Length: 446
Image (tube, rainbow, N blue to C red; front, side, top):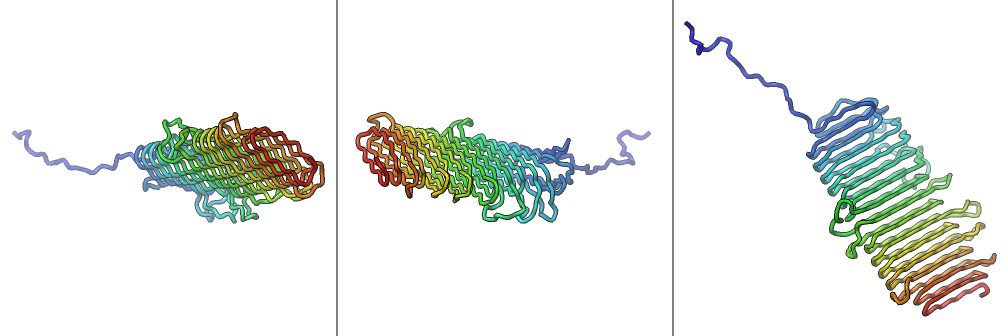
């Protein structure tokens, strides 16, 4: 009788099974939407645009099969210090991309996002409409968006807190006036947490530019350290139809006297400009240059509207405007020791150039220097706030070369010390109220 404990002739053996581990990044395509999803770890995702809606993906060292028929792309990497890059392949491969919608959400962590097209500006690289949305979540993030191709391009960046470094560039460089690229409209929207942000926006030859940038403290108290820094450059040297620029910057959350916000604006070549600057109760520094080497006698009128509300704090405004036949400025410095310097200049042209300035200096010891050159009509209203709130000084100079028309200057002020110089105006209507006023008019009748 054989014992049941006797060894069998069919002895068991071990076999190595195929892997069952789940990849950190997945990619699926459904109804034209390519969805790339990471995890809470530090993901690295690269998306390469090929011709005709074909997309290649490399994520965490794994290369996925090609995806065809892609109309929009969604990338979500959740937590971790992620790196996401998007762009087309070489121009030898990419031709017509068509419309493109790109949504990136990198979640929490110190993330890096790069969106760019590498096709040279001397090659026609067809992107009809391009919309890119980037949600940075929380963390100190780094973003670079560089798009030179497309007829209508939109970029939106959102952040839950401050401490981000964000750069956006749209359009071909302005010095290349003749290229096969025609970017008609570019829109940049930013909604960021307050504190220690570094933001730069630059546009080249784009006919219609719109930029809206906001900061707030919705993510809690602003990060400690310096305030926000905005560098905004708009350079359009293209020929043809009028170019328009609409800019709005609203800074909130840094309402502390120990915070210093800085906004720098450099605009060139736009014939129709509107700007709205609204800063909080921090110490703000705003520098603005708008240059337009027009109008010539045969050019159409050009328009400028500049509205700056600097809030409370010790603020500084330096602004220069050149070439705008119809200019209107509204300045509100709020309370604090404020310093302002404004220059407006226009050529001697056949149009009737007119400038209007409304300045509210508010409480505090304030100083304003105002100068206009070449305008047929100047209307200025200057108010330093309630009596006895500090020692205010204003110096204004209005110069009109030649004397061809019956020209008018209208001024009203409530100031401690006021000096005005008018040259070349046949008619002057001046109303003053202050402790010390000096008025000089040359070239006309009082």
